[in-house]
Image (tube, rainbow over all chains, first blue to last red):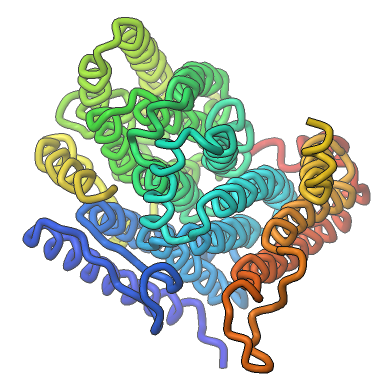
Length: 478
Length: 126
């Protein structure tokens, strides 16, 4: 028996609330006990069986991911009803739940091949939630998205296979002890570097690091709002989280520092920040602009990974959280603005849209302020953390470059977001009045946006708490 | 150098196949050829894994005639990984083929550049 879409949505919401509660429990438990726990799956112990492992960091990431997911489902529900055929709405929620499962598996797993399998499931389901909106553009966007993702998965699989060949293990902890032996004996070092490089490239392609960011505007720009929010805020972050997990738990920081990968990621991240912002300035469509800004934010995260050290990784993970709550708020507000502007996201039609829909305008403004990095909001704290990480790295070149990039990108961000804000808050000229659609007030949109704004303010005002949690998590992560 | 390559001919072939598949997937404009490239790429990885996991003269780890020595058998994990990988690859191919059919029905071509040019006129004003 097929459930109607509305019932499926209710089940999904309940299921996500349960996941939020469980993730919060894990976070609390590991925080109080001060150590991570490992759960052996099946009857076989360490070198053979499969494990999941949880700590403060995994709990924090899972909690944030699930809150954002819940908010996306609630706020996007009305658009799901219009964008997706009624007979397929329940299947949309099936895909979304499968995607949630893959996200959770990637967050908790302690086995690199399980990571690969759920990576593919994540790719397939994210393609699925993209194409449910049946217009030509989404199909094309999905094909391009899939092709790049398949390149990424292929590279990642090859990297895993190479690592398995030199270590003989698939469980992350056993791999790490084998790898530290390899690094000590300087034997197979080339293969090790090669495989880490290949895996990093694969995951960088999948998460959209410069120069692989060009699929973003089409993918995020045409999907139904829930999908756009989930894809940009969660899916690309899950790939980065897996990469960080591999660096800490499989390769180990000592071995990783002998490889030039950090520097390359740092430079590519900076290029991503600049190019993403410049492309965002040239976009003529609001969603495309927000999507290009996502490319820049991914650049920030990789820059943090590239800076390295505890401070660098803390900044990167903090930015994962900060961007997840901010970007979902933006992607859930833009369709409301479009709704009162002839269902168009083109800037010229959006003129004055925030005056027609005050709620959406206000939430878009909060998101934009956070993106620019105005104090009180989370974007400001993460920029501060990046600057601090660069200062702590002890390299003058890095410090100068990071400062320059941060200044430039804040300037560019401010230019295109404030330009947009001015446009949506300006009364349209006479003779160019847009037939304003009726404003639909929706308690679900209100609730979820308020939750996201609260999370944003929490990360901005109490950033020390989040930083404390992340650092505690990182210390028990390796 | 050459002798090392010859001794590991299977791995060398596997990496060459991976390279061929990767370039096809990245650069070909025809969607079906891209998909074939993807399959070649995955096959390369599987060949690599299978040949690394096999040791000449040993058997699959199923105890027969009471032989329990570890040296008599090979590690079954690589084969298991190959099987999992094949399943993943098949499902990905299926999804991609269905997407290709959908695109072909709409645009009547398989060339990605042409489709992209046509889609620009689709709902231009949004």
